[in-house]
Image (tube, rainbow, N blue to C red; front, side):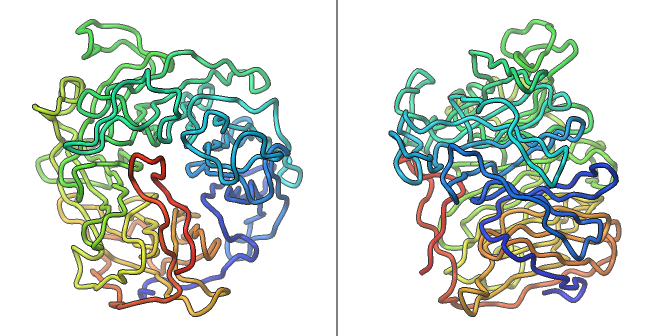
Amino acid sequence: MSDNLKYVTRVPRTSQVVEGKFDRVDGTQVLVLTGRFGFKTFDVSEPSDPQPLDSFIPSDLAAGGYWQNEDMELDTRRKLIIGALDPRHTDNPLAGCPVGGSVRNVSCKSGFYVISYADPSHLEQVGDFVELPSGHTSSCIDDCRYIWTGGPARRDDQGWLGPILTQPRPIGDGRPIWVTDLTDPSNPVVHNDPIDLWRNDGYTDYSHDVNVDDQGIAWVSGRGGIRGWATDGLHLDPYTDQVREATPFNPVLVAGGGVGGTAQPVMFMHNSERPTSGAVKASGVADGNVLVGTEEDFTTPCGSSGKIVLSDLTDSWGGEGSANSTLDHPYRMQALDSFHPFVDTPETANPDLGCSAHYFEIRASTLAGGWYGQGLRLLDISDARDVRQIGYYRVTGTSDSNPSSNSWDTEWRNDRFVYLFDMSRGVEILRLRNGAHASGAMRTVTAPSVTRDSFAAQPVSTLDRSGRLICPLFKRG
């Protein structure tokens, strides 16, 4: 652990956590967790001492069978959890879906649940499960009046989405986004036609996750890059060359595209954020034109795995670059800088640990990222042309009760507390001795080198056509 971090606590009975988010409910600060266990709530009025409130898993799922909801959304206005269900879950009873589910099997349902946390001590499901042709992540559009749901790999009955290629790189094996009107949570209306088509050099592919910026642009990350969509107002549609009204059911592509500077040509962009506060700058680039994205990849050796990449949006506005991109004439945004702990520091990464970046959260100019087996990484991104590591927390395991890091996501609490959501270790809380706004003044640091860890989590699935892709389960080596 870097010396600008202080270890606070590890929250009991939170292993197999995937994601967590905060909200205030009737004056109480609440942490909502999702993971294999379904959902849990905690009172975090005292940030260093979370107190359990309730737990819940839908009755049609087996205990420990919830998967994956890795970017859980909270409708803080109506106090609703939007919980995506990937087809790799475990039913209760199993029916036609095998244990652990399947991306290919048509019998393995996908979609999302709506769970009320209006009383965080009594979680309850609202309405029926919303079944969709996609289900890896579900994201809020227009204050959660609409839900965009994407991923994972295609089912056996989804060939109508277009061709799948293996050469010159994997292209096409993914589900786009389906849109649900959630104006009435008890009566959702699903639109028949998917969106975010042709995202990968003209091929429809895996739409992984959505992040809406402060200006209302919905950035969709996935295989083929990161694309920004307007969901209201009049815009020039680059596919038709006509000005039209954008809606959540029929958005207009306005920016983004393929990402330059990734470690792999597969270019699976996992998640993204466009900082608009002015805290992230780059010389020669207008404010708001920096896009931060995570590449997820499990390629070995370690240095060939996923990076965090900061891209220049400047010449992508209007969407023509992405709309016209082809395999023969690809469009790529220019990389301002990127970061990987093995490539960009003298650190020697453990070959037994996952080396890919995963989810991150930005507070001011400090990025806190979960980096699978490389743990928590804090980056100063105040200068997008010079990304620096300013903090780290990584565990080399000693026993089953003290496993190695398998870090998936982070969340800031105030300006100092960092909550780390680790699939193996559970929720861990750290305190940044200097606030997140002070990143530019913090020194560059390097984590200690590691050679081998016999307790490390081993990936058992990877990015290929068999359907075992993105965010694998892990087992003991």
